[in-house]
Image 1: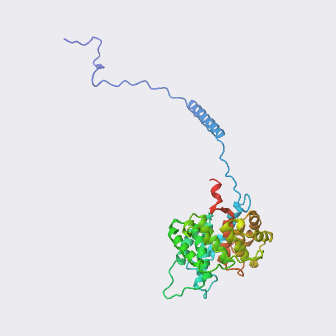
Image 2: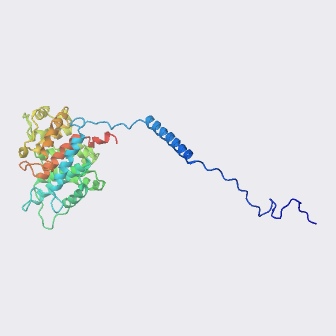
Image 3: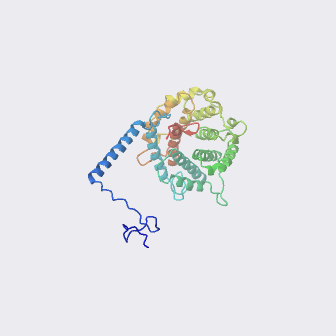
Length: 364
């Protein structure tokens, strides 16, 4: 007996069977293209409005505050441009061996060449610390330093010139300390011990040697390494104490006033000496300009009340000293590498306080 419904078709299959076909929904009508375009445009308008609202609601980033240098407000662009010109000129003075010398050719005392190399490294280290954009500065420092610290050749006689040794060690200490390379920590400590031994032998030599010595000791103290100078770090700073009643701006008086200002503060130095310094004109006169003298005055001006006025007047003169190629005219008062380094030393003194670049206070 057939149980199939009379209405059942031969092709009908029970909905409950395992092979029941999936029911397919009827196909939706395709959205017309104009409607799609209109929707996209509307979405774009909404997104744009949201972005504009967010921009209007977010304040623009504040301009970094201008931190005046000792050279005056808004002087960083001029200082940076001058820095890079001097560094470019200093890089051009390197010898094929990677070091520096007092003059080209033969006949240069090895210790004098070491001093020139120390001054060259000092200038480049300041340029690097100030953010110089000149390519190859770091590599040049490494190459020159390798020559400077190379042990002397067997049989070579060490110079007995104490003044020269003081200048070499002082410049090297300044270079390593300002350069702030962690790899130099041990070397700096050893040099500091040698510096103490050399400067303690006798009275300081007046003028540039005494000034660079005092400045090197100040750098050691400012960089947080005062303990390396003993229980009383300031006692290590050599004082000539021989100015008598003379009060003028001669180098020996300025270097003595500097040593006293570092050791005892501005109140411990003859104020009349800086009064003479600030009265003197600051004009670039080519090879007749003594940049070592200017550097001593910059170091003193940075440590006495009213000293910033000296830097304000000095900046145009320094800009005039360096030609577009970075060359500084003259060898009457020092060899080229030293003159370049001295310009950079003055710039560094003008933008740093307590051993730190003022840029750190300007924000990002």
